[in-house]
Image (cartoon, rainbow over the protein chains, first blue to last red):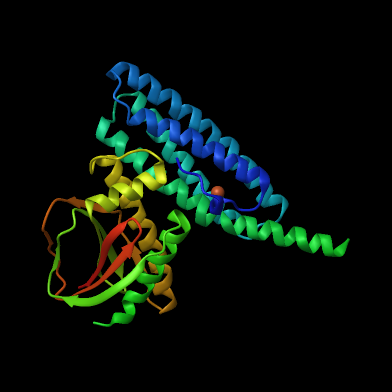
Length: 143
Length: 151
Ligand SMILES: [Fe+2]
């Protein structure tokens, strides 16, 4: 996946985690689009999807902890977006492992994830950075 | 049919391309058409309900759709496969979601439906609308049209 400087929100921890998340989603997509033999591919798809899914949880937890620490006003709404996304990934993992989804659905799911994650980082998360940095500035002034 | 309804869609298109792709779309001519006919191969249709009933249609050339997905994924795309069309569908979904926020500022409350994808050449997208507002865009990644049909 392509990372751009403009995607940064100006909070180091979050920016680093976003880049790691991009890497893991990139690995997953690469696997989805590879032409390996079927059973091999399924194993790799599951592995890279789990690897990404784990990090989604790690990152969302860390990002939400920061939002709370800085009293981010849109916390509830943002939390819900994260919950919905996690639920969607979890449902896909489950059904894919149970052979309920075909290859077309795998392509559709990963394509949507690509665009969704970029928009979430490049647009939705920007407000968090703005908020945190303005709180920090005010704290500096009071010192 | 009022062209002012088109403005939130134009603004949303502009902002999403800039934030996600660092690409500035140049707005071309705006026209009013009888039917939604397009020569572009990758079409994303977003149904709209609420104060405005109709649909927004994003029509990308095949080349542009491939380039957009390449610019996001960093991987080479050769065909309009399910991965590419789904990624473009989500892009249409995001732009339309933003557009409804803009329409809300004109006191119009609208909801959007999940994207539908239509691919192929010389497509006539039928709708109940008798007029379609069309705007053309040019970008570094290619050309695309956005149509707004209101029933
Ligand atoms: Fe987030």
